[in-house]
Image (cartoon, rainbow, N blue to C red; front, side):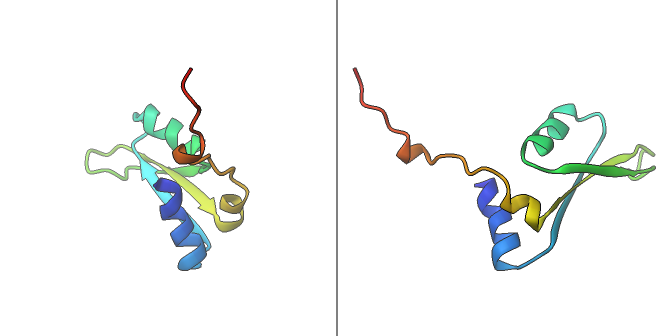
Length: 81
């Protein structure tokens, strides 16, 4: 589902980059972004209303093209027994 969204951005809309941001305390979000192929590109200081920073992520179109494609659940059916 998420890969389909990025596929649409890069291959249909022909964008060159997709960016994301999150609060630096959200370690699980940061881990997921990195596993999805995003690179940490930096911080924006005092981004949020409480004065905390934001972590910036980016993925370029050629980086997306290099990501492995996960097998579809319907193609990974094993017989019982």
